[in-house]
Length: 551
Image 1 (cartoon, helix red, strand yellow):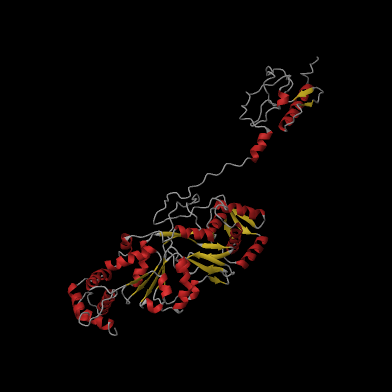
Image 2 (cartoon, helix red, strand yellow):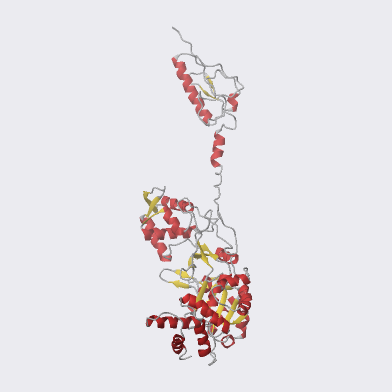
């Protein structure tokens, strides 16, 4: 029994081969319009021989796919071949809309098309600039946007892993105080360079990293430069800009701000009237007067008249030199609350620390070395001087004139910064940098300023305020306040006896510190003799004999 050529087994095999060849040409974008058939018949691209039971052929004007069941994102037929008459068409799905179909050229263009940008996280969610916190550093979106020295970050990572032995990737990000999404590509590149290796995986889609032999050699080389493996430093220009945004000169505290700052002190309204403009200037002042009248107490509370918080960097990068700025001994960190957890992206740059506006007090221990950059030759890490740590706050030079260095040395060191509001520092590498000198400098002294300094320096300290002895009414009021502090019942009759017996007859001046000191003497006397702690005339007699014996 004879079979037609279109239905013979060999014909079916030829048809399948023709379909395969046409499909290959269609996917490769062949423009020839067809390929030679195995059976010797001309094959038309995008068509297939008819078989029994097939549906009627699609009219020639309609493009037909090369396969019976086209895969998803199938290529469109060649336009030149689709315009030719088709012998037959198999059963097929409805034609895909042109917008959904993708040609090889369009797929290639799609691969080269840049990916859509990642949505920006809320950088300062819940924060609005205000007087208490005029600025907050935004979390860096990328290495470039954050002005981050990637080479420096790599050296810190090498040193940290060498010190830790093995460490998770997220812990590395916490160490350098950068988002993990910025550190992960660096770790992947170090892995590709075979400087680090995976020791194991973690449950948080992270890895435990260790150094390879070549990585250890690199880390040891970095140790020769510095042992620093802490927070990624910020650039010096970024630090300078932050000081401008948080300067005390733009705060201009008012009377109510000073009253709030001195709320725990009994301060004379006349004194507050003179002190207010000096504090509002944000420049500098002399507080002078007899000892014991609260000059240091006043100076320590001046900062409270300004905003509460400022942001300072943990460290500053100066062309590869590391300069520490944050000092836990002089700065009180008050970080904003965060949600915590692995998904916490943060709303601020964690290379910075929010602190209370600093009040740094330096007394007789002040030396010239403390006013210059201190470099540790072993670690090659530098420490910022006191005046830089006190930027945007208050620097109190207590007992001025009693330092180990001469007054002339200190004045010559600061005569230009006090006027120009910037300072020059010398780094250990020989670089000289310019940094802001933006703090309220208070010189507290028991001596007359004119006996200490010359007119040129006095001109640069615009305010000279004498802290006078308190009047008798304030002196009696101080006893009431300090009795509450020392938990001694107040006795107005005993205080009156003290004033009329030990002060007025001998013309002894009142001092603000004396009520506290005498009450402590009375308290210690009572406790030693197992007596009830109270104010009596004889107790005051004993206290005055001790306290004023050489005064």
